[in-house]
Image 1 (tube, rainbow, N blue to C red):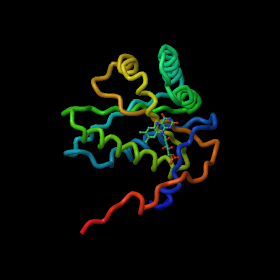
Image 2: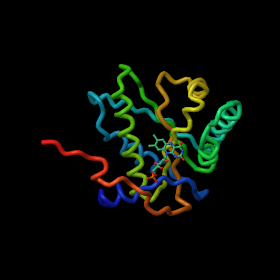
Image 3: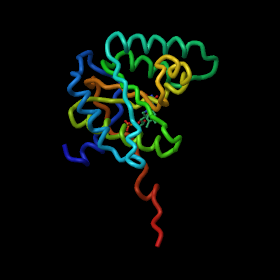
Length: 177
Ligand SMILES: Cc1cc2nc3c(=O)[nH]c(=O)nc-3n(C[C@H](O)[C@H](O)[C@H](O)COP(=O)(O)O)c2cc1C
């Protein structure tokens, strides 16, 4: 797939077939992540791949923690259902070694590589930020020395959404001379 097709054709996929995704493909996606640029080449990304029972336990915990919250959690229950249904959930961490904002940028660049690579091999993904509603609980659950950055669902798409509106180049750029 050429780069323009990958960039323009990728969409967030929220419905998945129940078919498994082979570990080999997950490794390919993560390998793509490792080619992202990173601040001082610090490669501040780390990944925890959840499938099967480990994913069920995680989503059970997430759903239960969401249920305790008394404020509006937006699309979080929908995101939880998505993680329950996707065959793979990748938790993305930032090692946060120096506490720089640029470490977050580095890991975000890695995520974009993952989404594009997954799309290029026919897999669907969705970047999930709703996990931040239960940030402390998730940190406590995994007990990693890193900071939670995102969760990514991965699976074989069961939908084929069309393009989503985008601001035009003229709306987002100013050229200065
Ligand atoms: C940082 C970030 C957080 C996101 N969090 C969620 C989320 O929690 N749940 C969800 O369904 N989609 C989430 N998305 C997906 C966006 O809704 C989606 O990228 C956006 O609507 C544009 O659609 P597209 O990805 O299909 O182009 C997130 C995307 C980003 C970049």
